[in-house]
Amino acid sequence: MNDVELLDMDATSLARAIRSKDVSAVAVAHAAIGRMEALQPTLHAFCTPTAALALEQARAIEAKILAGHAVGPLAGVPLAVKDLICTAGIKTVSGSVAYRAFVPEEDDVVVERLGAADTVMLGKTNVPEFGYSAVGHNPVFETTRNPWNPDMTPGGSSAGSGVAVATKMCPIALGSDGGGSIRIPAAHCGIFGMKASMGRVPLYPGARDERYPGVSSWESLEHIGPMTRTVRDAALMLSVIAGPDPRDRHSIPAGDVDWIASVERPEGSLKGLRVAYSADWGYAPVDPEVRAIVGAAVAVFEKELGCVVEEADPGFADSRDAFAALVAMESDLTGMRRMLDEYGDKISPHLAAMLRQPWRAETFTDANIARKALVNKMWRFMGRYDLLLTPTLAVPPFPVHMQGPEIIEGRMVSPAQWLAFTFPMNLTGQPAASVPAGFTKHGLPVGLQIVGRHLADASVMRASAAFEEARPWHDKVPDIVRTMRA
Image 1 (tube, rainbow, N blue to C red):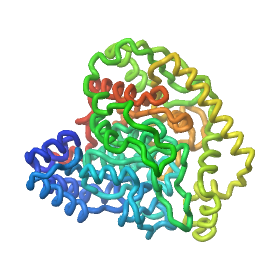
Image 2: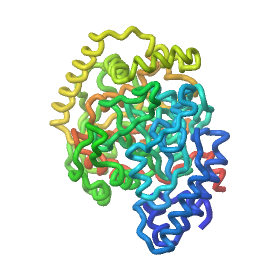
Image 3: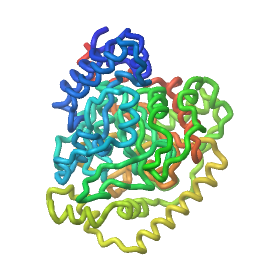
Image 4: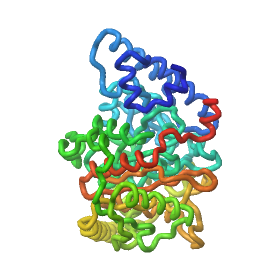
């Protein structure tokens, strides 16, 4: 099997082939490293590649298999890890000059678990500074670019993870999502991304240095989750990384979701489900081409999957200001302001502006009240529906080095308006995924967001798998990859 054939395999098939000795874990690692190195000068998905470590791990896994020892469910599968997620002995720079030399002493829980499942670490993927942005540029590394058009952003903050999976450098990656940061690059890169319910996947310790201890800890907002080319691979990852851990006080008991079973028989599994479709929340501007593509994807749920679809809005108000205040409240403003004093104009301007803002206690309490109101709107709304469908993002990918477009649907907007559909699900903690819905006339991907009721992760997985079966996306690759395969 040649390198292209190896990299075309999904994680589930790859792990099975490696365990059965049909495929060499070392050959897979070499193929992944080769593609990463070939595309890195153009796309800059990785900020800290770990090729030597990947080969060392692959050789160890292969030796275990040849010796007849048991290996994990993801044995030999190349993995990319977002650079906000701690990796013992490997730099976790978080896109900041303040953390340029930071090397954690311990792994994040999810890295521990995936390591125990015998994945192969391909490297750390690029992010905006500390994840306080939804794009892919920072003051330290080269800007991550969209593989479908390198002039465009791949979205963020899990920018490099999205690009690595979309270009088949690796079949799986870890992202984190405090306001959409898994779903945003999943949509802009044409892959699958899942934010499971709050507490499903434990978070610890987060990217931090003892000088600025709480810089990346959005404790009640952030989720870590899978970014993959197939829904089944995401289910496999979640079967490994989900489940409680005493280091995360928000983690919840496992056992009510069989991740693998939830995606095994999607045919007919959605028949009769009541599905709400909100094209714009009732207030958000949405690019007309996005509206059309997402509308066509929603029609699949009604015409082909047997759902009862109804256009309906939850009825909550725009909560961007409340969300921004909660992010600030859950940040270590004292430590980060000390960092700003030390590094000055080397800090990203939008982050510096947030830190300099004179936050008031009333702003934070008002934001918390607004969050409670939104949660109440959503649980009442979801009492009438099994699923909620929306666009993942209000716009297709836009040029790099912007925080967001200034005009959407003919209306002047703030730089964060394009994120109107993602961050409310972080406020509620509901499970939400982005699936590829289609492409614009310029060949740029558009995502459909699938949201479930509180703790109804299996419903989101099942719906995602059913849509994937109806409108497969696994073999759609950017031209930059297609030319490599020719």
